[in-house]
Image (cartoon, rainbow over all chains, first blue to last red; front, side):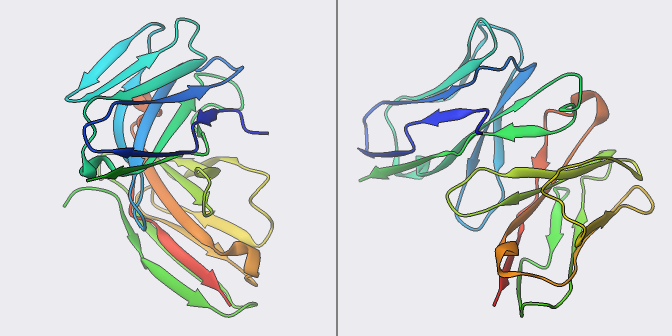
Length: 114
Length: 114
């Protein structure tokens, strides 16, 4: 059972287009992380959101944490070919048996064509 | 470079052989995590250490898997009697205790069991 569901799984767009990736769960997380991973490499941390309703911007990337802390979204404006990669969301819990580990979604493979 | 490092980057082994991977975390990080990632999936948690203590192990970690962090610095992950199903990317991450959700990943070790 996937605790974090990402959609879409695949996204193929032209350079300059906008896109949104969604990360949904029935569980509440104390924080949610977004990572970007290139083939053959480890995930690279992009952002952490911890407060319900929080919005963070990183250049052309906008991250939002849902009010109930069960979902998040990543929006990219004017995509570039360098944005191509696997985008992963990961949730963390603050207590209980899940404390200390990240639960990942299955990822969204983004391909930006020139 | 003060990031997380992993060795080797690639390992090809025959079924039934034992393999050992090493992870060197970011020097001031006292938490160290191991994850496994198969093609098309997000990373799955295997185990984590706080200093030298192993605090949690996933059910994914069969008896053939063992991890150590003897001095609270680097860690090793050993797989005995490898099986083809063990083929995956093995990722190591580290964090500070107070910011355990902000985990920084190494480049991974790609294991292929033939």
